[in-house]
Length: 160
Length: 245
Image (cartoon, rainbow over all chains, first blue to last red; front, side, top):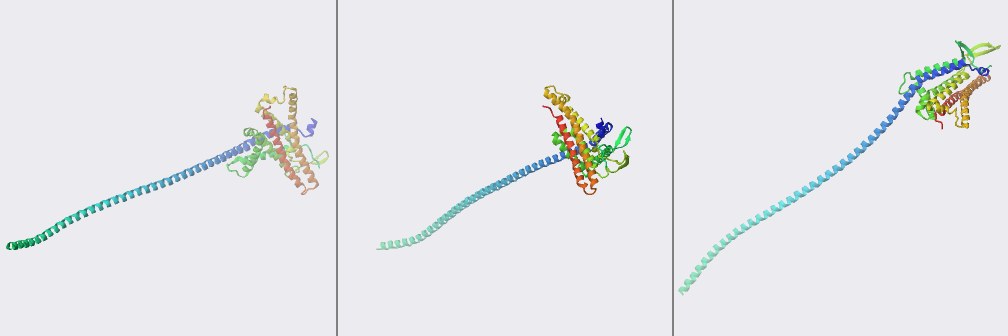
C-alpha cells in the first residue's frame, strides 16, 4: 500500500474520478451524442432519400422521353400513311374522273357523229329528191319536147 | 525546480481531499458539458458553428469506433463510453498545455523549501484519473462481454476445465485483464506526466521559443494518447463481445 500512496493513488480520489467520469458520460450522452447521432442519422436518411428520389425522377424522365419519342415517331408514320393514302385515293379519283370524262366525250362525239350522219342523210335524201324532181321535171320537159318531135316526126311520116 | 509525481492537495470537501488534478478535471468536465449544451441547444438540420464542430468530432469518433466494432447497432451501444473516454482524455491533455496550468499557484514552504503548489494540474498527470478511466473501461468490457454472449460463455474465457491447457490459458486471461488496467493507466499517466516534465524542464532551460516545438509535440502526444486509449478500449470490447470458438 505504501507503493500506491507513493504514486499518489488515493481510494477516495479514485472513486471521485470514477463518479465524475460516469456523470460526464451520462450528461454528454444526453446533450451531445444522442442529439448529434440522431441528427446525423436523419441527415443520412434524408440524403439517401434525396438521391433515391432523384434517381427515380431521372428514370421517369427517361421513360417519358422515350414514350414521347415513340409517340412522335408513330404520329409521323401515321401522318405519312394518311398523306400517301390521300394521294392515292385522289389519284384514283382523278383518273376515274378523267376516264369518265373521256367516256362521256366519246359518247358525245359518237352522238354528234350520228346526228351529223343523220342530218347528212336527210340532206342527201332531200337533195336526191330535189335532184330527182329536177331531173324529172327536166326529163319531162325534154320528153315533152321529144314527144312533140316524135309526134311531129310521126305526123311527118303520116304525111309521107 | 521540483516536480511532484503526486498531485498536490489544495483543500478538502468533507472527507474528500481536493487535488489540483481533480479540480482541473472538474473544470474540464463542466466546460465540456457547457459546450455540449451550447452545441445541441438549438440543433439544426443544417449545422452551424459549434454544432458543426461537435458533429465533425462525433462523426469521426463514430466512424473510428464502427471501423473496429463493424456493427452499427453495437457501436451505438458502446459509443457513449468510448467517445467520453476520447473527449475527456484529449480535453484534459490539451488543457494541461494551456499556460498557467502548473504555474499559477500558491507559494508555500514544504520540508523547508519554498515550493509552488499549482492550482491546476492536468488530470491525466495524476494516476487517480488514469486508473479511474482504466477501471471503468475494464469493468465495462466485462459487462459488455457478459451482455453480448451470456455469463456462462463469457466465464468460460477465464475458468475453463475442458483441458489443462485451456485452464491455464483462462488463468492467463484473467491476469491479462488486470494487467490491462495497469498498462492502460500507466501508459496514459506516463505519457502525460513525461510531457509535463519535459515542458517544465525545457522552459526552465530556455524560456523563450525553445519550448514551442515541444508544445506541438505534446499537442500531438495528447491526441495520440487519447486515440490509443480509445482504440484499445474498442479492441477489448470487440474481443469480449465476440463469440468464442
